[in-house]
Amino acid sequence: MNNYPRIVIAGIRGGSGKTTLSLGLITALSQKGLKVTPFKKGPDYIDAGWMSAAAKNPCYNLDPFLITGEKILDSFISHFTGDVAIIEGNRGLYDGMDAEGSYSTAELAKLLKAPVILIVDCTKMTKTAAAIVLGCMNMDKDVQIKGIVLNQVSGKRHESVIRQSIGRYCSLPVLGTIPRLESEEFPERHMGLTPYQEHPATENALLFVGEIAKKYLDIDRIVRIAREAESLTSVISNELKVTSDKSKEKDSALRTPPSALKIGIIKDSAFQFYYPENLDELLSHGAKIIEISALREKELPDMDALYIGGGFPETHAIALAENIGFLISLKKAITGGLPVYAECGGLMYLGEGLLLENKMYPMAGIFPLVFSLEKKPQAHGYSIVEVIRKNPFYAEGTILRGHEFHYSKPVNAFKDLNNFYYAFKMKRGVGIYEGMDGICHKNTIATYTHLHAYGAKEWIEGMLRSAAGFKRQ
Image (cartoon, rainbow, N blue to C red; front, side, top):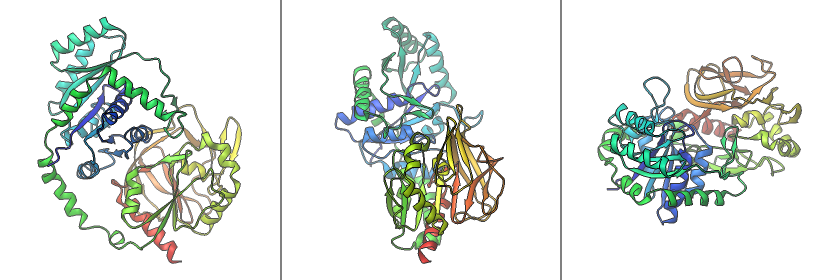
């Protein structure tokens, strides 16, 4: 049986170097002829996009808050198609939603019985690095920390003292030392790394981190650790039986979906935040996906429903506003009852306009909302919404888990106005206005909350049901 060679890349905090390490390993291993399956823990699109570009393979999400443990295992096993899995954690190893570290990278590593490689930012410390590692080792003995990578090391003496300290007090191998680097290969934007789709030299950036990995890491030893990972056999037999049993009880709407449903996806450099699992779920239930660019297309093609994901409409405001024909076509389709589901950037696109540096850029004008961009995040973290009003996609009373991350906010929000209303009440998170989210008009719903299809089966059910209803008209 495939032992699913795997490692989790974890850090002592956010910004400690996990993404550089993950991308470097993926690139270096790919250059050695190994097929890498990348996974990302945490509600992240940008890092996952880079990992996908490096591996030339979709990067799937394994987030314990968004997805149940059974479904995480099912997803990991079903998507493992190569020689080794690289799973990038988020924040610090034990950081979760509460003092217990619920939904942390450590909890994911335990669920997957995966060895952990811990990267430590060693800026301005020596022996304290060993104290941090020792604390991580002793916090939870079930977390299998198998090696350390030192980051931001300032020289040979600095490296020597830290290596000796970790060897003496932690008895863990140091698998690599990455010096302080001055490269600007990964420019940052307000939401993290620049998306790979917009980076001017993606291949060069990946080659750069691949060279870092080959030069500074013991790659062969890291591969051995991945291959020595504990068998998942017992976990599969105990946990996935539940998933198997539940899969036999799918909603009737999913068992017999109408054939040839056409679902449009606005996917370009302005709108690029999609979990591949969401699109896979549409395909697996018989839908045909039509990819559309809001930047290049002159009008909306024929379809039964439309999905607009998140992204950076603010950095494409001029091009989006100038594509007037597409905006008119989209508004006409929505007025005619086309089911539309929009998340975050998609919500902003369906508003009256974007206010950037005191200049207004007209958008689709579906909702009477104008959005501005702030210097600080307006919402950042996991969210929980309760469906409180009848709407085109969800039954009242439904509870959905998702996440928010945006710098935008509406400057003219309202509670209810004429034909517009909010379908979601935020049980956790910010939403659009006074703890409300999911603004609706006709068969369109737009929300700041991003959902993952594996954790919210109601999303795929709503998409198919709405599309089928529109198709029958």
